[in-house]
Amino acid sequence: MESIILFDGVCNLCNSGVQFIIKRDSKCHFKFASLQSETGQMLLNKYGISNKMDSIIVIENEKVYIKSSAALQISRYLDGCWKYLIIFKVLHPSFRNFLYDILAKNRYKWFGKKDTCMLPTLEMKKRFLD
Image: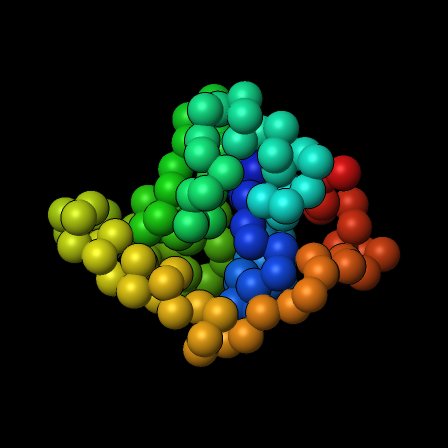
């Protein structure tokens, strides 16, 4: 079973996050698609997710995770101590998402934005959906 991560392909923070995940996902659990890609748009449509969604999205076993729930779902599969972040699931989602929304709202201002989506290296390319 693998999961799909949809991310903002022009966001520097999001691109760094994808690279962070790839380095710590030794079992290759995740595949990736940018929200701006044809595949990303098709998946948003398939799962009834607004294309204005301002969140990383995880699709796993036909279930959709957004915002802090998506981030915590990702952490479960990462190598090292990252999997223990799942403990933050005890916090109410409204509190977790309040913090997530602050970061999401300011991500371009704080981390910058690219004009185009990142181009994965040949090694990473097999992890990305076309």
